[in-house]
Amino acid sequence: MKTGFALLISIALATKASADCWATRLGFPCCEYSAQVFYTDNDGKWSIENGEWCGIIENQNSNCWSAKLGYPCCKSTTAVEMSDSDGQWGVENGQWCGIQKTQNPTTQPAVTQPAITQPAVQPTQVPQRPAQHPKPDISTNVKQIYASNFNNRRFEGFGTSFCWWANRLGYSDSLAEKAATLFYDKVNGLGLTVIRYNIGGGDDPTHHHITRTDSNMPGYAINPRYDGRSYTWDYNWNSDANQRNVLLKSVAKNRDEIIVEAFSNSPPYFMTNSGCSTGNFDANKDNLKSDAYPAFAKYLADVAEHFKTSWGVGFQSITPVNEPFTNYWGANSKKQEGCHFDQGNSESKIIVELKKAIDQRGLRDMQISGTDETSIDTQITSFQKLSNEAKNIITRIDTHTYGGNSGMINLNGGYWGVAVADHDNDKIILSQKYYGFGQFSRYIRPGYTIIGCYNNSVAAYDSQGKKLVIVATNPAGTNKIVDFNLSTFTSVGYNVKVIRTSGSINNGEHWAELPSLVPYGKGFNAELKANSITTFIVDDVEW
Image 1 (cartoon, helix red, strand yellow):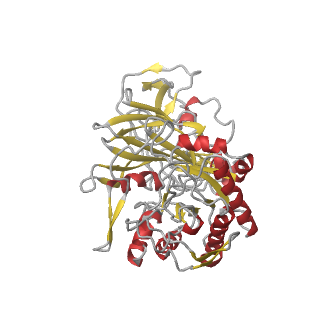
Image 2 (cartoon, rainbow, N blue to C red; image 1 turned 120 degrees about the horizontal axis):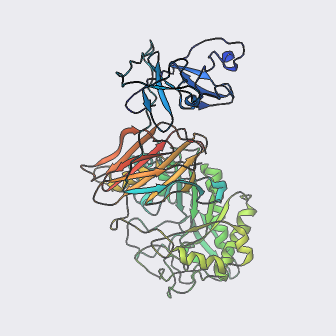
Image 3 (cartoon, rainbow, N blue to C red; image 1 turned 135 degrees about the vertical axis):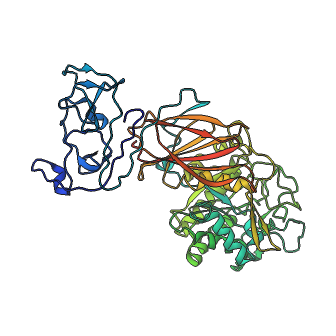
């Protein structure tokens, strides 16, 4: 479409029969001149003429250069009304037409802008492609480069550990329901799809040193017995009711997509060297007794089996350790359960025993992940030191990261949480981080593929919906113009949805839906507001 003019094109349906036109059997005419492709399906390629869909006949209008731009070639006039990089343009019947090069154009004085007659039915407007910004502050390439080949390149979603907020507020059905909606409902909340469930070991009932109200996790094993050769115990399946209450309410929000991962901070106290689930007397040494590896594996496998058969929750994966190669976990700690495992033999042994235990219960489809170290750097060395048998058992590497040479950091500093429970008033108070998180989790969904993107941005492609999602952050105190280069994609549609969070919780934007943008072609420009996170959803993107 030429500069300074807007052509309103209807998508109303029409019925014009033509014996040699494939589109007529579907109730549409074939194109008389246009070769510009607006849509492609199993029937063929479609364009628009005179406000109506029309089927493109291959090789038709091959001599008409302007047909590729959605305009006919001039049939009689050679008067040049405008020239640009595409060619010379005339006007016939109140419509722009391309002057073919074989014609001999005659220069005419400038004429008054021709009137373009609109269809009788008010049309839907096909947006004019804007010009590309000449000097953006940021130039970002979005490329067809896969971030990972894991899981067939399918992203599984965002999630959260249930340590230990679920244990703290699960006593209240009201707070549990509100939390499940805010975090796991994909319409009214963050739409998270991963739950990290903590299988508590349970400390000695006579111990009262864990003073936090949330991290004193109950275990399922009771009445332990040891005959010098083996461990036995009974189960209390009413234990851990608070965390389980939140779990079941959260899973109910989105059963088709939610994944539950199980992990353990510590074995039950009676399997430990210290007799305490917070760690060894020497925090640098293993706390699981050398003869208790099979017993601990049995305990975890029994819990996984009971969740599946009694509560309908199958764990996608399970890991027997959590931040194991650290000196964090000491006996009689005020903080939480924890258990040191040395790299190499100790970590390998519990992985192998757990595999035996879950296979005995027919849970062969449940993955064993490892080893959930405290940083990516430690995780790399821990995996390298596993036995070959243990390496072959692990199907996914899990790790924490608070920094390190290869990890993410907490950019905002301060309080890590996105929400706080007000128990006195039975409500959950949201922070601005909650809405910032949602800019990612609500729009980059399970099944998408994370692809190459740069400059504080993340991109994902939806191969089924033909959508490209870009989440861009601007931590600067000034607005920035960004140019997103999409030149590696086959084609890009006409619409970019824009959602933004910025400012403060009281006065800022929270998933604000802004006016849509129109790409300039294979790319688009946008303004990133100061201190904001903006999500762009580009429609009709062909890989």
